[in-house]
Each structure stands twice: as C-alpha cells, then as structure tokens.
Length: 224
Image 1 (cartoon, rainbow, N blue to C red):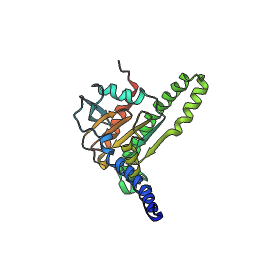
Image 2 (image 1 turned 60 degrees about the horizontal axis):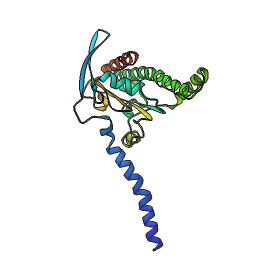
Image 3 (image 1 turned 90 degrees about the vertical axis):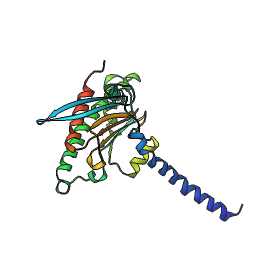
C-alpha cells in the first residue's frame, strides 16, 4: 500500500476516532441525567426555611419510591469515586461582586451539599474496607484517605462527555448534579434517573439550597 495513503489513513483514525468518542459522549449527556419519561411516582414535600415553605418534588424513576431511590443511589452502593457538578462554568470562580446574590447562594449550596455527601461517601468506603478484612482503625484511615476521590467540577464540555460516556454517573462513579436557574432549571425537584446519578433541579438559588437541606434529611432517615 502506498505510504502516503497509509499515513492519511492513520491520521484519519487518530483524529476522527477520538472526535467520534467525544461527540458521542456529548450528545448522550442529556439522556443520562434528564429522564425522557414520566416518573413512576411523585411526592411533593414542603421545606420550611427562613419563613418560606419551598415546595419540592421527589420523583422516582427506579423503584416507585423516591425516598428509596435516593437512599439506594447514595448509600446502597460503594463507589470508587464521586463527582459533584456544582453548575455552570460561570460558578468556577464565583465572584459576588459580579454575580451578586446568585454567587452567594450557589457557594452556600455547594458548601452544604459537600458537607452532606462527604460523610456518606466516607462511611460507605469504611464498611467496604471492613468487609475486606481490615480492622476498624485501618478501615477508617483508608476511608478518610479516600476523600481525595471526591471531585468537584463545573458542567463544561469535558464533564458532559464523561457523563455521556458513563465514565461519571455509574456503578463505580457517583454523580451528583446541581441544576439551578443558570443551568436552565425548570422544575423544583430531586431525583435519581438511574444508578449512580442524583440530580437536584431548581428554579431559584434559594430553592436549590432548600433541596440540599431536604436531601440531608432524606439521607439521615431510615427507609423501612
């Protein structure tokens, strides 16, 4: 075969194959986090905060029980790692002087949900190591070291590709996604569309914060 033709073919393979993978992942992002079907069940919950009752929908797409969905997704599996998507890249360097209250609320929300999820991830890792035969002290030390496997990122192109490809948001890698008004949030709801994915969607930054408070209560509760 002509050497020039071989070179061209190799170039096409080396360039087009990665582009194809990136395109596939990006195009499949939405289908992995935003359900295109009606939930099996909806439960409306009122969350009182600072004199306001925030009405939030809990939606179930897996078991028919939204509380069970969330608990199974967050606590029923031992993930190797976790990614918290804090929102649009505009929040990457959140400046209250530029974004005003939007930045203040999103920063509070991210701080609160990180404080909620980190202990859950660590506890799951602790029991994982206990099951592997390590003693309590060694299990705790290893679980605490695994905090490094908790990642925080904004919803940019690469993260959408990873989610679309299932690299993030799977049995091994938990995805928790914040979708507020800046990201096009249209419904005040919390749901798990599939194993390894939890989405908090809200039409206002205040409601998004209230959803984190609700998620905190759900995690602390026992599902009978």
